[in-house]
Amino acid sequence: MNKFDIDNLKYLFEPKSIAVIGASRDPKAWGHVILKNLIDYGFEGRIYPVNPKTESLLGLKCYPDIRAISEDVDLAIIVVPAKMVPIVMEACVEKGVKVAVIITAGFSETGPEGEKLEKKVLEIARKGGIRIVGPNCMGFFVAKSKLNAAFTAIAPKPGKIAFISQSGAFAGTMMYWATMKDIGFSAAISVGNQADLELSDYLMYLADDETTRVTIAYIEGVKDGRKFMKVLEYYTSKKPLIVMKLGRTSSGARAATSHTAAVAGRDELYDVVFKKYGVIRVYEFDDMFNIALAFANLPLPKGDRVGVISAGGGWCVEASDALESLGLKLPSLPEHVVKEMDKILPPFWNRRNPMDLVATVDPEPFKTAVELLMRDENFDILMLLGYGNFGRISNLPFLIPKEDAIAKEIADLVKKYKKPLVVVNVFGKEFSNVKVFEENGIPVYLSIQKAAKVVKALADYAHYLNSLEEMEQT
Image (cartoon, rainbow, N blue to C red):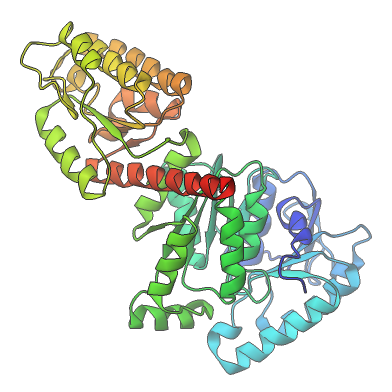
C-alpha cells in the first residue's frame, strides 16, 4: 500500500454510515458505551448495531451480521474478542467497508501470539482495501461529523485543536479533562498499536483539514521513521504540531513497547527531528494544552521580541527571568511610548520593559500600554500580568464592570493589530475579566512560567516558518 494512501480516511472522519460490531446491552461493555455515545452526540448518518443475540439496541434495529445490512457501510467499529476479529474482518471485506476501528486489545502488545493474530487481521483487511485504526485503542471523536465513538461519555465541544494519542487511557482522560476546562477539539484519535494507519497518516489528513488549526500528539514511538519525517515536513509547513514524546529513559522505552507495541527509539534522535521540522516538544500535558490554546486562537508573531505590561514590580522581575532564560528578547521602551505613559502614570513608574504600572487601580492605562506596544514594530508578542484584580481583592466592586469592559477592548486590539497577547492571572476563572478574555480568544494562564513557555513556542514556530520562506527565496 502506498505510504501516503490516505483517501479512505475521509470515511473515518466523515462517514455516512457506521456499524458497531459487538454492540451490547451491558451498560458497562464497550459495545454499549460506544453505541450510546454515537447516538447521544447526534451522529447524523446511519448507525447499525451488530449482535446476533438481540433484535434491537437503544432503539435501533440490530443485525446478526454486517453482511445482513442492505445499505453500504463506510465504517465498522469492532468490539469483539480478539480471536473473533479475523472472522469479523472477513465479513467487513465482503461488505465493502472502507475503514475498521478495532477497539479490542490482545494483539501485538501482548507478545508473539498476539503479533501473529494482528498480522492475520491486517492481511485480511488489505485484501479488501480496508484501512485499520488500532487495534487496542479507545476510539475517536470528530466534531464536524458529530461523531463520538470514544469510551468517554462526555465529549469535548467543537474546537480547532486535533488530538492524537498512542495511549488510550491518556486520550480518554485528556478528552474528559478538556471538557472540564471548556477546551474544544476538532478531532481526537486513539491510535492503539498502529497495525495499519499510524500517526503519520492522521497528520497527513489533518494538515489539510479546515477545522483543525493545531495538532497535539502524545507519542511513545514511531514505526516508520522516514515516513514520519516526510509527513512532519509537510504538516509543519502548514500548521503547528505539539508533541509530548515519552519513553525518554530505558525504563520508559520498555514500558512504551509493552504498552502499544511502540518502537521507542533513541530519544535524542527525536529531539533532532523535532527541531529540524519545527515541532514543539513538551514534557507535561498542561503545557501541551496551554500552547495549543494559543496557536488555536492567536495570530502568529513576526519574531521573538516581547513586551510585558504588569500591575506590579515583582511580576516584572519574574517575567524578565522567565522570558530571557528561554532566549526571548525584551526590547527597551521607545521614547514615544514613555512619553505617552508619562501622561497617565505617576512620575515614579519604571519607564522600561517590562512595564510596571505601579498598582494603578484604573484599568485604562493597561489598555493604553497594550495599544502603544501593539502599534510599535519593536514588539512581536505581548504579555499582560495581573490585570483586572483590584475590583475583587481591594473590595472595589464598582471597578469590576469597567475591568471587564476594558478586557474586551484589549482583546479587540489583538484582532485589530494581528499581534498575539497572552494574559497571566493567578486567580483564573474566579475573576470575571478572565472569562471575558477567554471568550474573546485570549488565553489566560495561571503562572508566568507557563505563559513564558507559550510565548517561546509561538516565537519558535514563527521562526521556523520564516526560515522556510527564506529557503524558498534562495
